[in-house]
Image 1 (cartoon, rainbow, N blue to C red):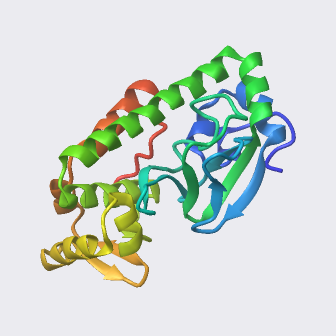
Image 2 (cartoon, rainbow, N blue to C red):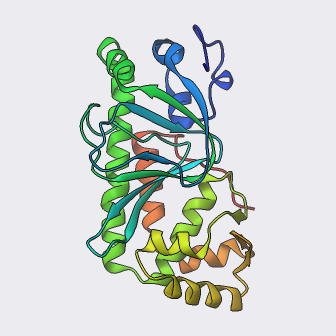
Amino acid sequence: MISQGRPSRTSDRPNNNLLRRLSEPDFALIAPHLAAETADSDDLLYNPGDDVNTVHFPCDASLASYLVSNEDGRDVETILVGREGAVGGIVSLGYLPAYTRITVKFGGPFVRLPIGKLDAAKTTSASLRNVFARYADCLLAQMFQSTACNAIHSIEQRTAKWIISAMERTDGSNIVPLTHEQLATLLGVGRSYTSRVIQTFKAEGIVETRRGSILIRDPERLHLRACQCNESVKNHFEQVLRGVYPAEAVQ
């Protein structure tokens, strides 16, 4: 268990910005029910149709992703969720069937919370309910922006955007554990398209590839190649839940 009682400092909490955003009284309502877990990359959290009975909070550099299956058998990732948020039962109340597949993108520490305990805390505290309602709004904003991005931006722009998005959620590290196959899933395209884009970025000195990861050599030029969708999402987070979206400076 993560905690058994009233927390004394925000720094004592799991390294999840949404949990650290809660006031001490609100966090105390759910702290006894939080349980730590370590997840591996590609671990399955929910399949479509599963009852949503647990909220999972990524911590540190862990990432979860939402995937939508298509009739051709491919999964397309819609959004990434890191320590700025949570997955499972956030937009709706729990115990409803999951619509998408939710998996662990980058393994590491997570914290889980039974939906029933979160719902009870929301009933008790209007301020806790407000924080999670605001996060649900930010999560929907990510989904809306992802839909627009897929419709109007080039593969090159979206590739740069996804690399930056992963980089921001992994402590601003210039080494992002993304493979060509994972990028292809994020983009909803074949692996060959992704490989061509990465080769172009390599030729321009923007990135290098390593086994199972991408090294960003020139973050500034990578930002210039990206669309502004990620910035739009970050701006919305700042307006709705200031300080929750990861803000480490990219070195």
